[in-house]
Image (cartoon, rainbow, N blue to C red; front, side):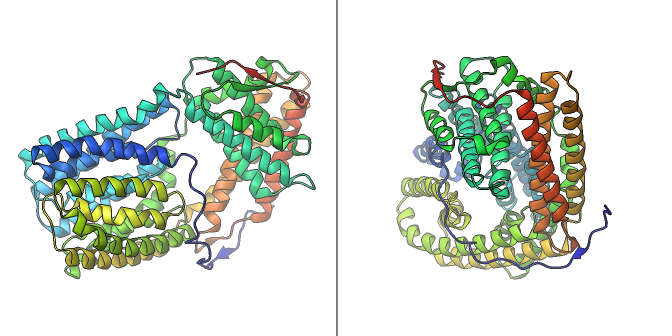
Length: 555
C-alpha cells in the first residue's frame, strides 16, 4: 500500500465538552494533602520568624510534593529527587539571570528558553501532572525578583531544604501502604478490562474501550516493573491479576466483568491480594514479567527529538506573550509567559481546549482573589492559611477539569506575589486579566505558526513497529518449539506498540496542516495486532477457571 497520504489543512476546534466536569481522580486527596503538608511547616516557620518574604523560595521546594503520586515508591523516590533537582536548576538559572541584569527584554528571552527546556524534559521523561507548569511558574516569577549574586546560594538552600521535606512527605505513605500505587494500577487495569469485555458481549467491542484497557494494562506492567526487583507475595499476586486482565482483553467473550471488578475492589486497603484460580502454573503465567523489567528504557535523546516542535512552540509563545505584555506596560510579564507555556499540549486541538479552560479558570480565579484578598491582608498568618486552602482546592478540583483547578491556582499565584508585601488588589486583578488574555492569544498563535509535522511521521513509525511486532509474534506462534518465555515477551511487546500506535494516531488526528492520519491502516493494524494477541493467549494456556482464592500477601 502506498504511504502517500493526503494533506489536512484545517480541523474544527471543539467547544462542546471543553468545560464539562468529569469525575474526580481516585487519589485526588493524596496530592491535595501532600502539598498542604509540604507547604505548611516551612511557611508557618517563616511567619514565626517574621521572614515571610522568603516563603517564595520555600514554596518552590514544597510544590515538588505534587509530583509522582501514581508511581511505586522505589520509582517515586527517584522521580521526586529529580524533580527537586530540576526545580533547583531552573530556579538557580532564573536567580542568577535576575542578579546579572534588570533588562526585561533579556529576562523574557531567558524565561522563554527555560520554559521550552522544562516543557521538553517533562514530556520526554513523562513525569506526569503538574508537569512543566509548576517549574515554569517558579523560574519565570523569579526572573523578576530583585536579586544579588550573594543572595542566590541562601535562597537556593531554602528551596533545597523545603524540597527535602517535600520528598519526605511524598514518601511517607510507604510506611502504611508500601504497595499502594501498584495495587491502584492493577485495579485500574482490571476495571478497564471489565469495561471492554462488557462492550464486546455482542461483537468485537468498542475500539476506544479496548485501547484504554490495553493502555491501563501496559501502565500496570510498567508500575510493577518500576517497583523494584525484590520479590514478594504481594507483587506476584498483582502480576497474576494483570495477566488475567490481559487474558480478558484477548478473549473478552469468555471474561467475567463482575469477577474482574470484584478483584479490583479487593485490592483496596492492605488486605490480601485476590488469587484467581488458573490451571497454568505461576511460572508460566509470569514469563513476560522479567522481559518487561529487562526492556531497554526509551532513549531520552529520541524522546526530546520528537518533542522539538512542541519545545519551539513553547519558546515562541512565551517570548511573544512576554514581549506583548511588556509593550502593554504590565509590570509582571511573567504571568503572560506562564499562561502561554501552560497551553501547549500534544496537538493543536488539545492546545485549543486547554486555552479555553485556562482563560475561563483565570478570569473566574481573579474574582475569587478579589473576594479572598481582604481576609488574606489581615496578617501574615491569614495569608499563609489562605494559600494552604487554595493549594488544597487546586488539587482537589483540577482532576475534574483544568479550568476548575485554575479557579484556585489563580488566586494562589496572586497571593504568593504578596509574601514580600501587600499590593493594591485592583492593580493585581487588572494585570492578571491582561496577562491571561495576552498569554492565551500569543500561546495559541505560536501553536498555529509552528506545526508539528512530525506527528504524521510518528504514526508511520508506530505502524511499522506494530507490523514488525505482529510478524515476530506470528513466527513464534507458527513454531511448535517456541519457548514460552519468548512468546510471552513477544506478546507484551506487541501490546506495548499497539498502545503507542493509538497514542500517536490520537495526537496526529488533532494536528493542523499536515498529512492526514491513515485511519484505515491504523484500524487494520490494530485489528490484526489484537487478533495475534488473542492467539498468543490461547497458545500459552487455557482460559482461567472460575474459582477464586486469596493469597495472604499483606504488605
